[in-house]
Length: 101
Length: 474
Image (cartoon, rainbow over all chains, first blue to last red):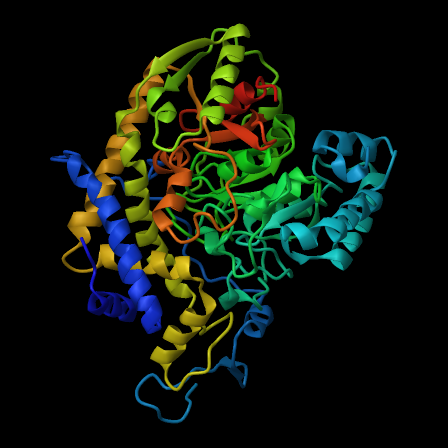
């Protein structure tokens, strides 16, 4: 099956990855090949087969839900690309208004 | 023999008997890194200063007589595993400046003993690849032939162990990322059962497949490291509670009477190298001479394993890599609004293959395609697990090649993703079933390229697969 350039653009938007026109073309070609390859799964009869989501068989692994102080707050803030008054700074979510915290 | 060429066992003996110090051992590795890393490109980050400081501390521990098995032994860590205070890029530019404030649990266990962290090894970005050519820090060269790939994704770790740039390494295996480079570089690599070692602090690729395991020079060393790092971790809810056996004792038992299966599908794949096949067949004959019973078996769904893998892994990938968006950590691209911050940071910070996997996963999980791809692959995953369950009623373990071919030329598969994916055709099934599998050197081709032998066993049979591997003589 072949994926169109428009379909690649749509997935790239969903995945939040900007692509150049050359990349769009290349991904359309290579992903189509991969989809052809994985479509061989249709040869397998899976009628009534339970899907596998995990392999350990563990169930209901819980822990106490308690608030703990993190001793690494400073180090975490140090990793942030932009900081203002000790808080993470990001561009506006809507439109191109001034930066907000 | 130079100190950097020692195994863990030899290094332990020398440290405990005061023949040399951890500082001397560490210096020997750092010198070898200086001499060889330009050619091999095995390390992305080398921690010369902190390694020597850690070695000084390790020597103090050794003086007090409180040494543990990995105290003072210099090791390397794949860059997709978090190391406190040491840059961890995952081999992608989006994390070019990322310094984790914490250790992955397996690394913490080694570092509290006084293990000496030499540096971070190159890999395919976030584990995406089988040749180490998908690193944004350049490919790793195979120490046996610099024109060949080291394998992937843990190519840097494999090359570093093979060429004695470190005593051992810790890496990660989703569908072959430890075993296939171990095979290509001629070292021992173990993918443990899913859940045996904590995944906390590993940059996640496919959460239902990922495992952390060692790469070592001998099976004995493998048992030593596994004994120290395995076990339940409260920070990883998928780690299993079963007690950790003493692998170092288990591997010394002989293998007479063990039933070892030879799955015919692993010997007839398309593109199978005949030299590889002959080397594996010779090792099977040797095992029979040591008293193991060799039994032909069949795993008919083997040919669908890679198709299952390339639906489920990119799907889990596309979700896991969503956290890398330039917002809270890593490199943020210049952009006018938040959407652009995401889209441009990811465009600039990921190599082509990472983008491809994210796109495939996003497609497979999108409305209208979920049942056709994701659910279908999960169902075939169940059938592949049942294939293994059935065969493990007939035999104790399986023997097969790790890869259908030895290390290939750099660049030779770079333009065709499917050709590259096929390098993991024998490695992916163990990842799908969550079972342990080890690659151990079994011989060399006429061109002096190493060939790995793979032993697979039922879940939590690490001791057994290491024991069989310990009987394979290179």
